[in-house]
Length: 161
Image 1 (tube, helix red, strand yellow):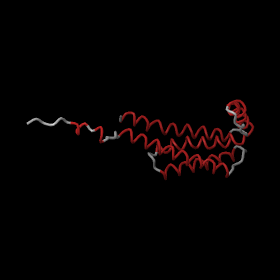
Image 2 (tube, helix red, strand yellow):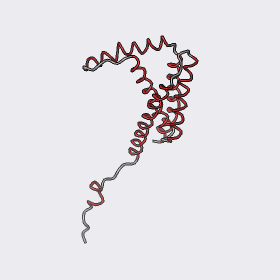
Image 3 (cartoon, one colour):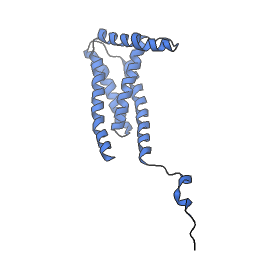
Image 4 (cartoon, helix red, strand yellow):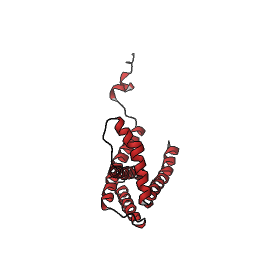
């Protein structure tokens, strides 16, 4: 069990770095390329699925905001697991990542948006909750619960004298 734990502890930082790289690469894409990506995803994937289920299609703007939440939710789950549930470290890392993400967009001539920072922070909060749920689930798997009615000690045969 200890080997798998240490393997997971080695994988988490790599997953965090790869997720951050993905987020920052998306931030430096030219606005036309980014719009083309979200447009393709919206028109070719999401809206056909929504129409199939009789739901209203989504706008490009909505899809882009959902992407912000999704990216930072994934990042925050990984940060929370890596930090072993340390709320302060996970929140600080998530906030700094959201701030840097929008700051990088200033360099790519896309312009930063305080609205996007707030949306990213929604993802950070959601990811921290999901990360904590994962940690609770992992801890409960390690400690088997003993149920009183399944305790074999209470079903011993009486001794014969």
